[in-house]
Amino acid sequence: MFLQHDNAPANRAQIVQQFWAKNKMDVIAHPPHSPDHVPCDFFLFPRMKSHMKAKDFADVSEVKKKTLEVLKTSAL
Image (tube, rainbow, N blue to C red; front, side, top):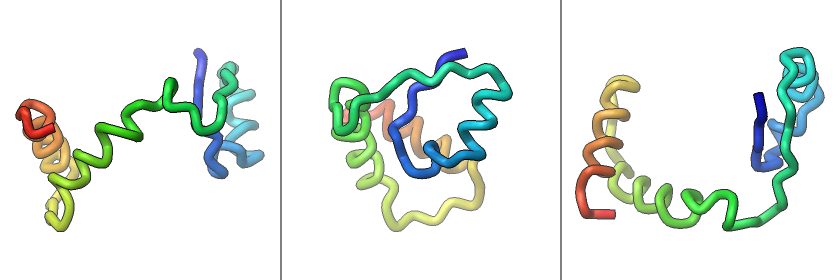
């Protein structure tokens, strides 16, 4: 199994890295601030957030339903 993460502090924690090593997960280097590797961070997620901001969801299934609804519309 290969993993490419975003170098977030939580991903660099020793306990996380030990878990990856224990489970034989190969970590692929990720260049910092590279839009080629995480384009969703720059176009998709901000637009999704604008459609879901200030909404109350009862559970995860409602979040999934709203997410699919927004993705299926041309609003993005």
